[in-house]
Length: 166
Ligand SMILES: [Zn+2]
Image 1 (cartoon, helix red, strand yellow):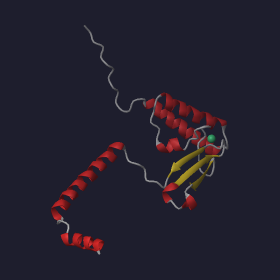
Image 2 (tube, rainbow, N blue to C red; image 1 turned 135 degrees about the vertical axis):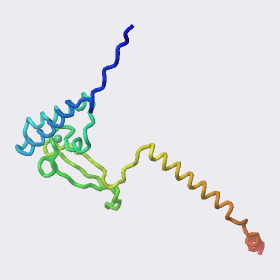
Image 3 (cartoon, rainbow, N blue to C red; image 1 turned 120 degrees about the horizontal axis):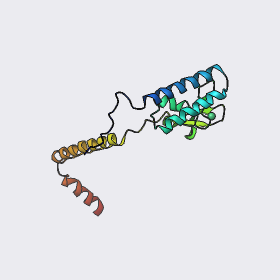
Image 4 (cartoon, protein in one colour; image 1 turned 135 degrees about the horizontal axis):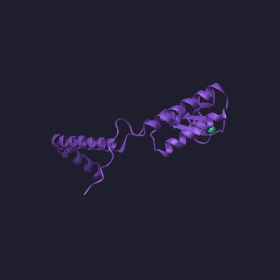
């Protein structure tokens, strides 16, 4: 009876070679984009980067993800290959939390929109913990209120009745 043992986990992060590959692809694509204007090879490297990270389900950092155009895979560098502006669709731009950073790709015109004025909503577990805490605080407040308040003044009710009859 021999049981097949699961393979031992190697030290360090799994898929290390894939992380190294995506890092190289990103650096090479950025370099080519900075050196040459509208390099076809840079687009191919960007496309390879997307494919490798999707196939291996790698976690790509937010900065990297935000600097690659979703439609044409070019590296978005503000002032070189992309234009940045801030939009505010609220009436007269009165709501500062409605600020949206729009990054437009100069090559294909694709847009990326990031809300920057609004505070990011916390994780669900954090929100629930906060809600529970608030409820607990409210309950403790109510308990002190009940013990602290006196009965309503009967004289007030009397004056009210009197005004109605007069
Ligand atoms: Zn693009």
